[in-house]
Image 1: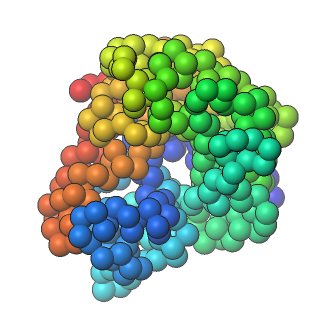
Image 2: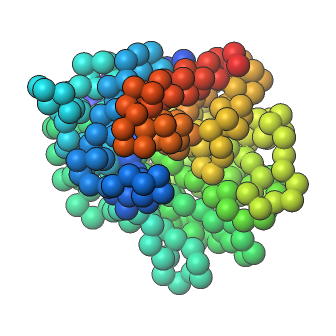
Length: 333
């Protein structure tokens, strides 16, 4: 089956101006860690309740175009009396259901302290099942570390190749691939070092995507922002982050890509929003929409408010954060 038209339509929908993507695809161990830090017991039922809280927040369809889910969540349902599967519930709101399909990072053989994302084995079959269950896009995260002598060419190439193979398999199965090459914020490196590594990584990623015949019009790029490392003594201001990120994208991202949905990485919720807002104030003539695909930066306020019991207050906190990021896609904060 030829999914070309569907892929292009859905990719454009995912990066619609004013909307962004909710990353609610934390693995069970990650979700458990965040729950336990707030005294919340982690179980399939409590994780279901939390995701239901987010997805059923009244009005999110104004700000959210798609939701990335973990496999457990993807197979769960709303907690109301009629128990509608989350995939169907989101579709009814005109929100695209998405699925995380990578199997996480593992040590890259032959390289000290560098990693590669695994999960290509049996991916075709998994993608076909997810499509049949309602998924219309997928996500795969590659991790690039900056340190002395890192990243190596081997690390960048291995991760770029895996991203491209995943993207090609997604499109074959009718799923828009979110291509996520994340240059980590951990470390002491400067914003200029981040720029150099991000530019090189994006260049190799798009070379591999083209080599694997990926339709760039039917994908979404989810990159890091060009930013100072968390432990860098010289923290670049909002304006410099925005300008260098835009410069890096203009030099390395083909115009055919419909949109760029930034990850928040280790940024605070407010700073991630401010960076996105400034970029959109500066970039009225870019070929792609600039939006968000945030996890913690969208959820943190809601989770801290909820604490296992304050549902309505948590939903208000989530909606406020979604609204702020929607305004940031217009540069209107």
